Image (tube, rainbow, N blue to C red):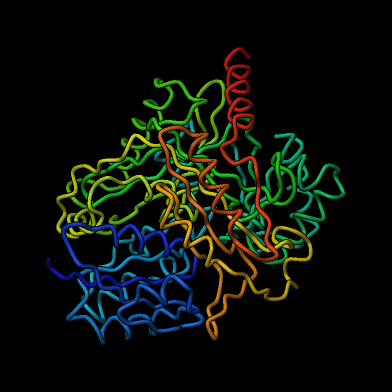
Length: 459
């Protein structure tokens, strides 16, 4: 079989799942050239060449790619920092290696304010009410706060977001992160002290993640997924980067009607066509977008957009791709990606995380030793189980936790409950001081979403 070199630029998020999906290839022999912020158990087993680049500096990554460019066919990344920093532009210019991510011009997650203005053009009715508070446009903090208080009183339940990406953890939601005016003002002041603030009307409903691939011309929709952002069961606790996700055996989630899903797909396709412009736009190539949506009784609202797959949501998609993923990526490079086949399977991804993750103690948590040997052995024996290291470090043959999610455990099966049981089995095989949510894709959680959507439609 033909050897295909693949550059992986990783912040230790979903790269392990990308690597495993490529490794399933039946048409090619993938070779992995991994530029990563730390050595993980997965990259240690799968790499052809590995280089630790702690800060993932774009110039260092470009130099790594240039060194091995004769052996690399394309590259992918799991971090928005690389995309926002113009990683594709610089790597392609300096090494000639085509990167499957958007270029800097289309990395809209670098500014939530600019996103909202873009959505006014692309979606209009799907854009919640919003206002931008820019320290450069106010004479004093007091003036900004007075303006914020007026807008907050109009929308009743504000959502406060830093303009720059904050992985969910910097976002404040009325009713969860603050419940009094004083708490709300304190949260606003803290974010405002660091730069522009976007304040949006809180939209209530059921959330989902919309993801799509593109070769710059064609727009290929992935199965819809549901992300669990709060740290604790029952959607309690602080916002995190995501504790897990699921997709159903159908292309859409159980709480949506087929017609509602079709409306989302049609709106996203029209928006992409306007964003792309005429013909082909090579800048929009790769796992091109990940939109967080909120479904209400009268349609959907778009909460935010990222120019790459969601950390856990794309694992739910990758584990159920039927096509050879190397072929998929080569077609993206060629501009001939017209379809992708997905299995009619459900997938549940559960993240095992340090005990302090998503708490006030998370910033000061110390590395802890964990053992995934038994979980990896179980993976070889259990159909549909995937063990994907995330923010862990391999040192001296031992695995140590970082400050973020440690292991993503995916279960795939014909039913959602079957997938959840497989995922839970994998989590249970990991040894060490970790915790996880037990309600990801649970019957109770799904039923709650279904009932809530019924009530919203009636209202």
